[in-house]
Length: 508
Image 1: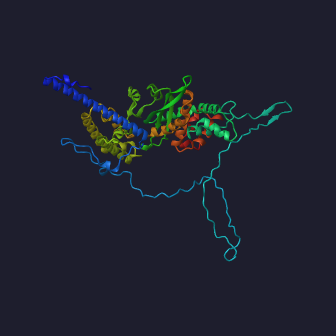
Image 2: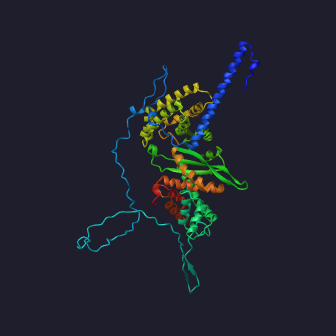
Image 3: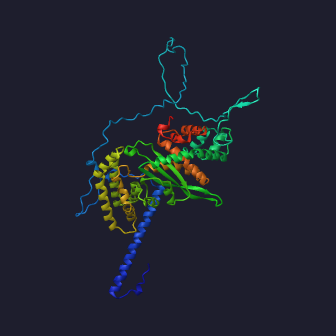
């Protein structure tokens, strides 16, 4: 702002008014400069900084600032919360684990190169054997399964008898369920795009175009789609479900570029509160991020939905059948970005959130009622004090400051953030669903985009089953080969739930 010094007013009151206006403009400009500098630091950290959101040990000694007329600061939880996990002896892990017993062994015997003692010429006798093991790799191989069906003819009536041909995953398909399971596992578990798999098969002397591999994936997804539906029923039967979404570029024919679709993830994991139901994750691909999609996916769900800060999930609460629980990890992230720039208020907020996580570490695996009781005793005072402290700090900050935005982000969701105190099934964050999404992001990075909306839907179907198998400790390739074989051979549709990748079905 330029000031015309030769035209300043002589009236003191008018001059004071103009000075106040100029001071206010300078303050607004400084606030904007600080905000832009903070954005630059955040961009620099996102590009060059570390990903881990950890605090230094000495920062854990900080407590909330207290004024003379305010309640005393919150004391560290470590001195008041008993260790309910019990104690166990510490066992130092071995330097190297033994090789798995289930691997086949091939013995190689190396005999001494002498038949008599080189020192004295005496006869050598057996004195035992020294055995060591090394890992070897046998490259994958491609084989041809030749199906022979002998014909039998009746000379009396001229009738020809022959066994029916085995069913294939699609008419004229040359691939066995084993090969198709390998393609699916390589694509959606090991994140190898189909064109790379085509090149790998070519090195084995088998020319399979990428389009043929895509047809195999399409056929397999058609068979597996009912299993994804059954898996979603299992997820929606839970009292608490995690939900999140991630971008999924989809090829847009005719425009020469991709458009951004979304991949929605819904996860069930009851293990933190001692549940015995198998964990599961279900993906759905959509062309955009409209709130109508999660409303459609969760149309039959009744319970607690634990989500991030996306406002589209709030539409699910209108009929009172779904209650939202917010994510403390997303709230913490807002403060951590400011903590990296040296904000003491952000650091203190992080310390108090860290204390809530310390409490939760002692509650993992306990029944919901017991978790609720301990949270009422230990977590509620911290949450109430943190809310009061944040509101006090917000009143002292400029409204456009980045720290004020972080505090408003937390306070606007405070009821959802504090809901975990009243419900022992709720976790502090949505990390389970974010961990389930992480492999999808790796596949997206390698494949760059889905070839079509149909391709995105097939991606969601197969990824749902593979990631669920991994959550339950089931090898995806073995499971896919077994399930595809059973379904092609006519497995009863009424018993399809028995094919889900759950531990009780692993040996079925």
